[in-house]
Length: 138
Image (tube, rainbow, N blue to C red; front, side, top):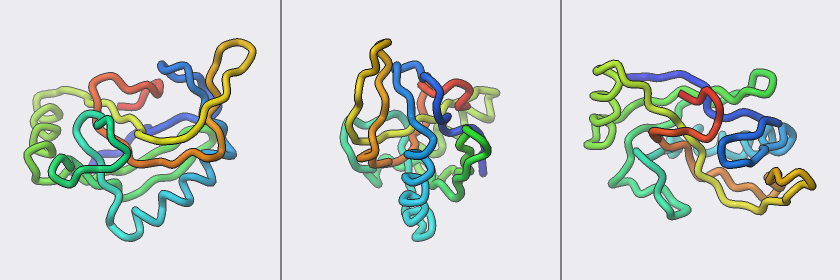
């Protein structure tokens, strides 16, 4: 099963009160592309609190990621793993799982209380979640 959808939005306040500046996302997507090119861009079902992807929890592999305007799009291959099979069952039942980035880095709070992601952002992965913070990331 291959899925395509919105993965992230630049210059948009998300449900976590964060904004990912476009120029930072462009650079970090280029860095993340190395994992995709090496077939090592895995994600989990639900966010782990840890800054690594645990292979025993892998549900999918990101096969493509690109930007169109301020929208980051992605394609994922859902794996035949226990967690991948849960994702498949959700979709086959008519459900719509969300997708959400897991990342490390600093935030700077603006005068209006918005947290701006800084250029030391490290994208760990995109995980399937029930409530994505990015608007429309299903």
